[in-house]
Length: 256
Image (cartoon, rainbow, N blue to C red; front, side, top):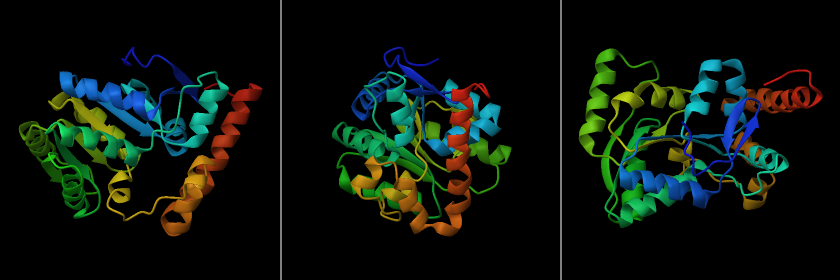
């Protein structure tokens, strides 16, 4: 059930995107940390929207999250065209920094789940240095395969005993959302937050696009230039499909 405070949403190809700002969603997440209210946050862009068209279970996960925030300018533009004017891009790496600053000021703690080998620990060290008072509840680098029952039970127990206020999940979409949805009933943590590449961004392994490219919705191009082998299939498939599906929706050829 969505948080009633952020009541405006935009239906983008069947995915309900929270029409919110960085400030507003951060404030709501912080309230839930303080009250220890279980919260499940997804941060998605065009990639997530397209993945949801091929996988109805994944679409349901996005729609069942407490907040599904727009991490991409096309989602922001579509929200504004739909009449939700108080909306802006909620970039995963920036959301992590903003919430980490609060946790540091209040002696909060975070658990870092994901990333390549060594990345989670490097991120934890970076965040602790940047935000004095922020405690590292733990780090975990999961295997690329599905967890065994024994591994899943062990990591759930580890996270629950860690006392974390937030679990940052840095896997790829839709893997991170599926992981959070599957294990959230077993985790006694106020906030689960999937931020994808934020782990790599916030330790400098991925360089951020210039601000003008971010505002023009061209960050995907900047990333493609940095990682062409890994990302070309994603962007050359997803971006045209996104435009095609929007055309189908607007012309009535297909309902979402």
